[in-house]
Length: 219
Length: 303
Image 1 (cartoon, each protein chain N blue to C red):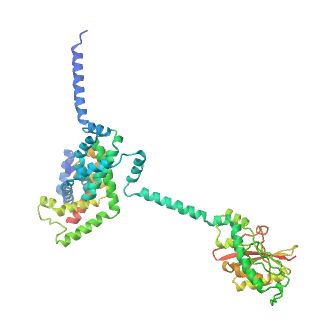
Image 2 (image 1 turned 180 degrees about the vertical axis):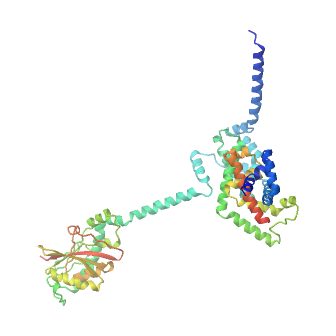
């Protein structure tokens, strides 16, 4: 039986579609899947590779939550330990990185709440302000300088960090993820397990709060 | 103003260029005309820029080494330990451990209080009343010695009066006359109190309505008691004759601190203090506050 040209064409089209689909889905595959599988099987080197790959980003995230290198180091350690110990529970529904950043965000947020409740940030602001006064430096940067210089200045960095430290935890996490760490809305939605619309509106509110704080300090 | 609010709500989209061309045109027109919104939008952009310009922080050089050391130094996980770790680390502010500790403390304190509660005291009311009674009897005994037969006491009631003593070794019934002071069991009144929801006070445990005075002359004994009352800041609240059997029931309110004085005085006047028992507790129920006690005293004709 000889296939008609229409049938052959149809088969070709189906093949092309399946190729396209497979290439699209290929991009969604977790790069870390193999490393995760090997880590679960007890291969420490595989988990080391994962740690090596993500620890800088995780540390940076932690630092933004707690605003202190020592605390950030401890928090990073805690996050990777938690990830390692719970690796068997990772089902692979999401990417390993999303799962890891979920752990990091939750832990960072909790640590931030914990420190904030104990007046850690208020104490730091006061002591640092006192230090600045002692050294004869101005707290408020000179707004007459050009924006780039202003934004890059150490004082400005401190003002911005203080402003985000004063945010409530939900606002803080979203500002860190989007504006500081540069995650996409889709990634943030997955990490925070929120609809994308909620993510955007919450980010907007958080930015407005930071804006008011900056206005108050800089005006 | 509403337009300003709408524009303000879309600062994010405007800043990131996520609005369609039509809305972008409208927003641009508004921002051109509204100084306030223009200023706010500038600050919004400045804020996003400032956040994005926060310098990247680098972990300490030995971070990776520390991480590796921390990761594999920790002992392998066990389900039980994992459970508790999750439980206690889910919130670093530790409300759960604090809550558990508080709950334990409450349970322990509650248990201790329950074991020493007044209700528990009531359940052992006989013993308590006996103790109270013994002190009364002791003082009564001491006083009775002073008015021992043949003494100089001339109160008419004293004549021919017998003094009762508690069936308690602590009492001092060493009198020349046969004496009998019965501790009444407060089981009836304690039951009444408990069922009526009345919370007993210390005054209750002294034992209201539990005195019986045996005297050859009930009238004289009653008159004597009435004379005593003003001295101890007490007052008569009930006087109920029980015709036919020659008994009289008196209810007096006295300060609980004067209980000893009253019984002493009764003995001093030669009265017989005896447990009224459960048979008289039914018609009356003592009510007390922290300072006062209503005492029901039954005067009976001495045999």
